Image 1 (cartoon, helix red, strand yellow):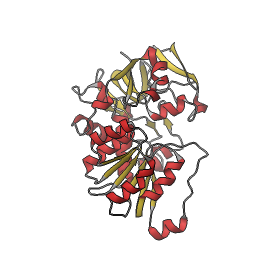
Image 2: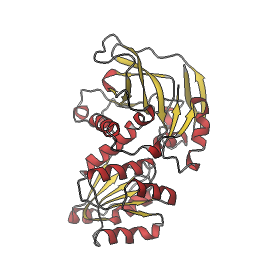
Image 3: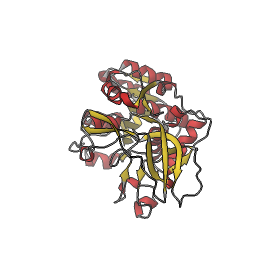
Image 4: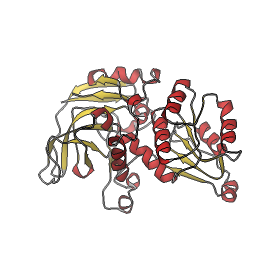
Length: 340
């Protein structure tokens, strides 16, 4: 089969490699589409998971079951599916609480092990989620990124009529806006340096959009009667933006830490202020378990407008071009690699 191996930061090789054989408890998936994630770009640029290279990245994928291990029940060959990328032991304290990323044995498809920029992948059958036959593959491939957003909203305990600032209007920021709108948050303020992406977020349901950093604090205060936002979501991964996020939330507010920073970057927090104002910070990075099921339900019932996320397609052989040009295409909220 074909597999796009990231041999070193910035360089892919599409190789012919053996097709995996599913273990007794695994399913073999013939991959149809795999999305390029911001995490994939961090890996491509050498900022994340460098110790895993060379590796086949890719974790936002959909496909059809092409084979089943002898112990697998409840799945059928030919079914369209999506897959939870987070592989825990399934037995420990953290797995039982659906906090798989803290499992001592945790692995992630496409990050700590070979992923889905390939024709086939073998995965634990318990992580395979059947999808409706009539949902387009380009929509199904959005399940994993939307699951990350679902989990962030769940961790932040977002509810109706809460004011929320979303820092970053890229693909994840846009999904944050759409999910917040569905939940009933108001007002929703989005900030990004790209005027084009700010407008796309406004079209997706944001109430206010800011592309000039100097105007952000004033806009937030004006939209919240001078209090600051109930919740601020940082979805870029910039320490300076995290510091700004703390200033944008109200007393008793909540910072949803979502954007990945470098491993050595830190956020200075005024402990006394945090205590006296009863502020909180909650981290969230990946959807898992019920987050995946909920995301699939939202997509298949049309709760997310996917038009801006579907259309930028590249064949596997052009994966190098797709990654090289990624940053220069702000109008493409999502780029997908097409396998078949």
